Amino acid sequence: MKVLKNKIILILAFFLLAGCQTSSQKLPDLLTGIFKPGKSHENLSKDDPKQSFFGNFLDRFKPSKIEDETIRVSQANPAFKAFKQSNAFYNIMTAVKSHPSVQSAMSNVKSAKMNIRTVESGKNTQVNFQALSGVSRDNSSNTFGAVGSLNISRLLFDYGATDNTVLSQKKRYQLSKVQAEIAAETVALRGYEVWINLHRQKKVMEVYRGGMSLAEPILGQIKTISLSGLADKAMILKAQQDYSKLEVAYSRSSAELAAAKALFDEVFPNGRTDDLQALKTRQITQGKIATSTMLKKSPALRAQDFLIDSFEAEYKTLKAQKNANVSMSAGVTAPAKDTIKDGSANVGILVNYVFNDGGRLDSQILSLKEKIKEVKKQKQAIERELKSQLNVAIETYLGVQKTYDATLELVNLSEEVRDTSKDQLVSGRSKIQEVLNAEVTLAENKIQLVNAEAELKLASYRIRALTHGLTKEIGWKPF
Image (cartoon, rainbow, N blue to C red; front, side, top):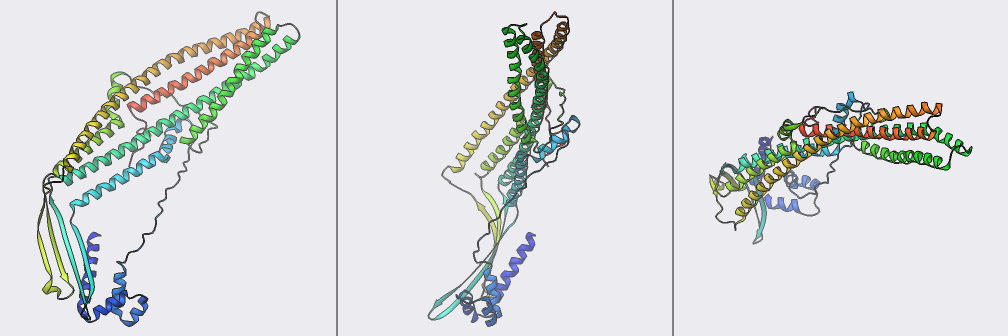
């Protein structure tokens, strides 16, 4: 395509110069006719076909306004399957692919890839064409002149400056792919978190609704007994207090459910949550194996490595620029009149060396050197932060697991107490207030169990995200 384009330019230049030689007397009239105001191309065509040809040709070089271009992006409209364990990978994958942050990162990857080609073009042969024409008037006579030139240049040697620039851009491209992976990992983990939290709030609401449906008739019986004079006022006040706890907690949970649904819709837009099912707790890795696996696979650390490599290649580029660069240059210049006789050509080797730039290059080298140190220190800080996050996640998992086991026993015990109170109420060995209190206590313990289970799952997914990642298992790749 580039060769064809260059040939077209040369052919146009040839016709221009050849046409200029055909009629030296008419050329001044030609140009004045072309640029004479109020004379259209149609009239030119009637007067002289050659004038029309050259007029149309020169019109191509007249300045023209570049039209505004609207670059549009589509709005993702993902379709999710039922939210259950068997569809988890599909739904997370769909959420990742359609999320704007991931799509933005993917566009950055494409841009970085194009930048490699831009930098590599500096190693290719460069071809430039110039044409100059004009009219001068002296002693009542018009003199026309035109000249065309073709220049070819190619870089031969620059101490690796261009090669290191290309290498730096390739590392930037790899960095952009890892940054896209980080964006996808963030969305994937967020997807699991909002899924677990929404299911948690739904379970909490079910517990509160069940507890209130059981406690409400008991409270009515207590009020009836109190009105009959068989119970004192303290008992009815205590019963109302216990029931009010359930009502307050129910109202708070309703607001938390709405908030959880809003967060869920941000990751899974238009996802149906009527039959939302629970996710399973993930198997985790602990100890030194978990730490070594995380440090090996962490995209955050790999991103820093690519950034360091890019800066180091750029550092070599700047150091290479302190030396001379050598290039080949050739050119042909031909006037419109007596083209062969007065034309000239040259070919040679160009050596370019900057003796003094006022310290600009040295300052850039020192600045980039400090930047490399900064990025390496950032990598150390990220590594330390990741270790801390992993330790916190593992300790949270182990602590919540103990809490879950203890709460499960407490729920079983609370159910036994509730059932015993109901049985003894029939025989008169327990009070109806004790039954109500047992129902309220059971509901509270069930809520603790639901929360402990959700926190256990959240911790397991966070550990999995740190040690192995969440996007590879769903099949996502940055190109």
